[in-house]
Image 1: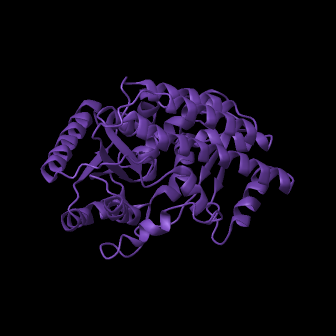
Image 2: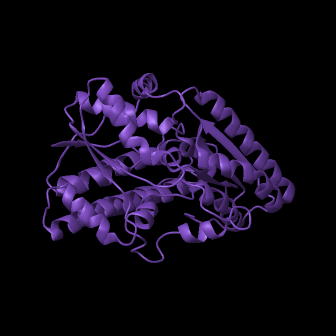
Length: 372
């Protein structure tokens, strides 16, 4: 069995580690490129969202490298993600690409359900080995999120553009090679030291912008044109309402680690604007705007793929939230036709607006805060 799975931000680091610990052969798709998108767009339904098409492109490219089994997460609710794996398998069969399919549905009660499902999927490996594999994969994802948050602080204040990005890329390479918890911690400490040595202007009056929306579009830089890097280069400190380690703890570990995730707090903030689950992360998107306003952010960007139903519901609510809370919200919808130049122009205009508001209000922050 040679298992593949789609890219989504830093997810590949953790999943690859977990599967290899379980002695499963992993065939990673090549990094997402224009070719990946072209393949997914050519063979996927026109009305399908961008993540679906990129996933499909990933699987076609991984098949060419020898993968024979797809590992995908399942899902419930109004979001169509729960059907992705099955529809994609049918499309691939029509193309003469035959994959076995393993769908890992989210547990309903506790983490033991997740452990049991993973144990079965990997040939009933001993329980201690399964737990050790999950732990190691999660540590890598958690480490990536922690350094990414710190990088957002330094990128907005660095004196030489691109230095933070080089530290980040080196950290990802070290993290990928880390074989145990000790080496993961060493990679993190090395990255923290490198970031701390970057020459920065701590007196720079940076903007703080939160990014909310659909999880794949938030986490995968290819789909959002590396929006966090672009904003950082504009002197903006960025924070997301969704980080992968938080999502894993909430949805796969069923909140095993207490006080680790902001999910419940963010969802509570959605009231009274959106008081019920609408699928995907729609309710978190609405709550995220209020949450970020309380955290002192200057503006919010909502990211969603074209035709994403939960985010369209949230988008309809956000104008009222924005007006009542007095915080600008920019909605960016992406699909295979979105151009990077147009998106950057909108980002620059949005940041200009935020700068003007801030200058007019005269409320520049006097203390710099790292992270979010």
